[in-house]
Length: 266
Image (cartoon, rainbow, N blue to C red; front, side, top):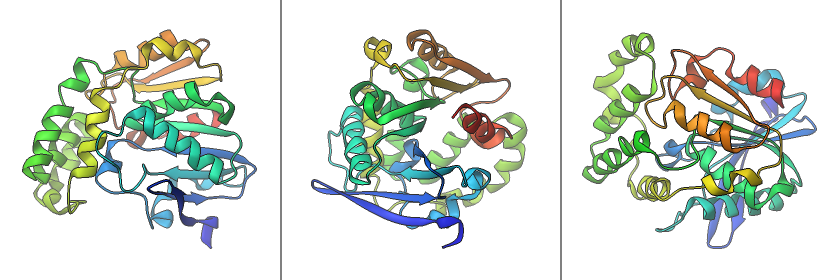
């Protein structure tokens, strides 16, 4: 298949974990996405998602994972990390580089804390060590929008908090159509993910992360806050920090060097 792209799922007790993979390189990279995974999983989307990774696929095999499906009520971030560890082992991945973005970064923290033998190097992007005031300014509101089924409001508020002003000038033209983009049949999965974020706090255990760690953030992040990135760097021994000036939570989309920076570190 083109780019060695694969759509798969890992059996887990009580469900499965959808994933896509691409590349054939000897190094393994596991990517854990953010809260948007609560709206739609990666299932069946390998060829749609391969784009940013094409230059690196001779050296890496890249795996992009969703959370388990179905996702039971009360699932915690630490539970999600345990699921991820089980999925890596089921795929025969004894040791992987790990990129966690936003909520995926919360999961990645616990994976590196609880299963250090599985993590070669760690990249934490646009995430935080615990719930903070910036996170509390958006997540409860998004949950209310989801409960009302107001998909357009959810998408617009997410975009306004994620992108830079220059990007939003172009993106706002799409707002009339957002009520139809990616609307799930139910918001149950989104709400479980969001609730898990609200009870997350790994601060006291971050000093246990021993693998090489790169922290990437947006200086103008309005979803987790730049101070979230700084707090991670202060707590993880030997970690490196880079903040994208003028960019926010979606700097991984806007910054032209995001993936180059990640793979250079790995």
